[in-house]
Structure formats: structure tokens, C-alpha cells
Length: 342
Image 1: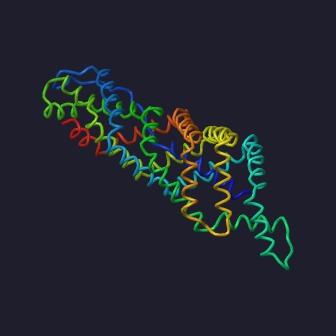
Image 2: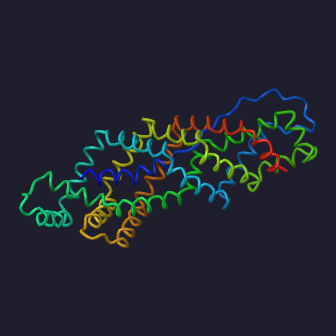
Image 3: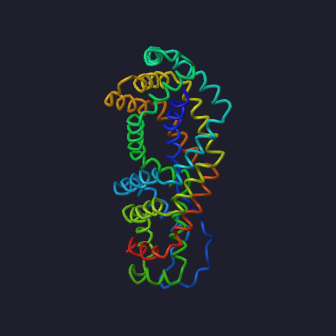
């Protein structure tokens, strides 16, 4: 049925939203003036910063910040609209359409559907039974406000829990950590910033290298980065651009095609379909069925593979690069970096 199709796509395509990320870019090195302290090799500084930022992504405070970030992003109008456009593109995939037809035909030939047909026949007494009437009856049950609210609540919680995984994809697969490390080293190239940092740290380059590679100091930058991504219109636009990409739709459609062939996914979907179609909504049973579906190894494998593929895409890396470059141009970045490295 069309309503369930949209819902099933949403559950997986919200994993698409799992990618929707940031924008980062590497500035070319500027001419270095004579620093006020012994110079730390730029390559070594950048490598230390990358290591520190990648390790910082595992810090509890960073994981919490990423969870808040993606939970907030899911409610942004620009991202919701982009998600709808992305789902429409996914639905247009001809191979997926053929797979989905077979999938939903199997769902319709089920005890739950036959029970719904009996209920419809009782409700339609005197008005006649028609295909259009049955479709409207079933769609009305599948789109009940309490059911929609339960699905949204459960999926939102699941995506918020996935914040650390999303952040890891942005930082590792989409080269976010490298782009942020470039922001840090480009500031070290600035004579005034270098002078002010030297006043705090002294003249030991190795001390600076240790600070750059310290995950706890890197966490300060990543917590701020997550907050800006969640709040800034440029962050929302970045995620929307990734969702809007044809590459993202193609990758998502391929992932869904594989899921629709998986026996465990089909069985879990049958169970969820039956509960959603029942005359009375059993909230506890529905929540358990949704949790079981989301916990399927097949779904988790596809979500992880899709997230990594999306993050590695040219579109995602370009958007990440652009966002990080803008992030590094903010007026608050100098004091933030000075305090983090102090």
C-alpha cells in the first residue's frame, strides 16, 4: 500500500538523513611570517590535529553533542523538505519500484489484510464494496495520527542515538577531521595568532604537538562544531544539499532494494504491518515491533554501508569541505582555539 511504502522508505531514508552533515574545506597554506616561537612542522601539526580530532569523536561529551545536533536537525524545515524530495527521487527508481511491488503484494496477501477486508465489508454495508473504498479504508488505518506520532517518536529517538555514528561518518568518511585540522593549522600560520599562542604555551613546539593531539582539547572544538552545525542556516543548507543529490537517491534506492530481498526484513515488516493495520492500536506491541525492525542485523548493515557510502560521495565531501571552511572563518574561532590549546 502506498502509505506503508512511504513509511518503510522513511525508516530507511531517515538513515539517509543520518548522513546529512556539515560542510568542510581545506584552505591552501598561507605564507608564514617569522613566528615568535620555534616552528612546528606544518605536516606534523596537521597530523597531530587529525589524530586528536578523530580520537575526540569518541569522547562522551562529543557523542552527547552529536546526538543533540542530529535530533535538532531532524526538525528543521529545510531538512524535512529535502527529505521529502529525496524520498520522491528514491521512489522513482524503476528497479526499486519493481521490488516494492512484489514486496507489498506479499504484504497484502496476509491474514492482517484479510482481517482488514472483513472490517471494511462490515463498515461499508449498504454502500457497496469497491477497490477504491478498500484502499481508502486501509490507508486511513495506516495513517492514524497516534500511529504516525508513535512512528515519528521512535524513529527520532533511534536517529538521535545514532548521533555518534553520524559524527564519525562526517569526521572520517567525509574527511571532516582533516578539514578541521586544516582550519587549526591555517590559524597557526597566522602571525598574530601564533604570537598570542606563543605567549600562552611558550617556545616548545613539542608541547604544541601534544596539545594538538590531545582528544580532550579536540573535544572542545568538536562540541562547538556540532552546535554550529545544528544551529546555523548554512549547516541546514549543507545537509539539504546532500539529501537533494541524485547520488544520494541512487545509493538509498540500491540499499532499499537489498533490504526488500532480505527474509528477516520481510518477516519483521509483516509483523509491523499487521499491528499497524489492526482495528485497535497496541502501542507497546508496535514499539516492540519497530525496535525489532530497527535492530535487525540486515538493516544495521545496510544503514552503516549507506552512511559510509554517502559520506564518501563527492557531494558530501564537497559540502563538508565548504561548511568547515565557513566554520573556520567565524569570529569566535580564534578565542576558541586559543582556549582549547592553552
